[in-house]
Amino acid sequence: MKRRMPRPRLLPVILLACAGLALVKAQSLWRALPGEGAFVSAAAASAPPSTPAHAAPAPPPPPPPPDPVDQAERALLGRLRERRAEIEAKEAAFSARESVLAAAERRLTARLEEMAALQSRLEALERGRGEREEAGWRGLVKTYEAMRPRDAATVFDELEMPVLLQIVNRMREAKAAPVIGAMRPDRARSLTAELARLRAATNRPD
Image (cartoon, rainbow, N blue to C red; front, side, top):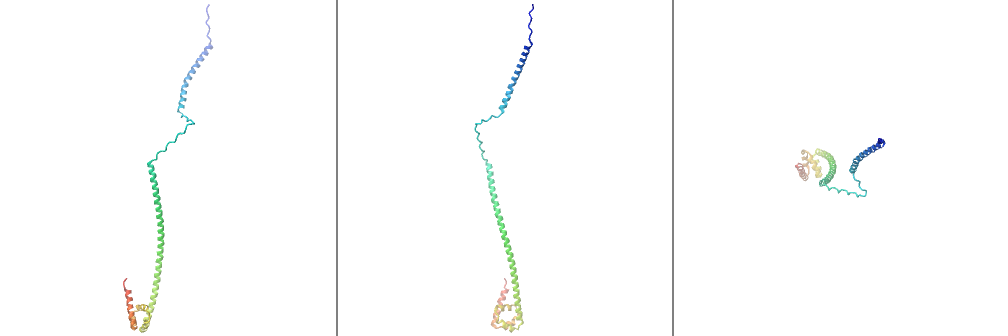
């Protein structure tokens, strides 16, 4: 009598296959985990380290040393500003002085014009007075020239010498000679001497 072989069951085989497949997938996932962890580690390394809250602040950096060229330029600019202020002050004072001088010159010019006008008026008045005096003297001369020599001599003997000189000096010689001849001798001599001095002073060159 032959012995029968037992039949294999399908369910345990299927379960075993599923378990093997799950194990393969688990190994694949495990291999992928180190790469992801490295990525996370690299990201964490690139991030700046956090400062502890209790750490003291760093001291500020020392200021840079002054530049000698910059200091020289500033000093030169300061001197230039001062020089410019001095020049502007001198120009302002000079302008003010020019204004004062111009005003004084205008006043002086106006005063000179006034004096020139006054001088012209005085000269005109003097000429008018001289002409009137001359006209008066000429009238007296004509009067004495028309008189007889003896009558005129009688008047001349009593006239004051300055007045007599002005009259006789303006008389024509043809009319004055008979009158002087008819005057008293001492009076005639005095008149002749004074008349000579007057004409010499009048004809004297300047």
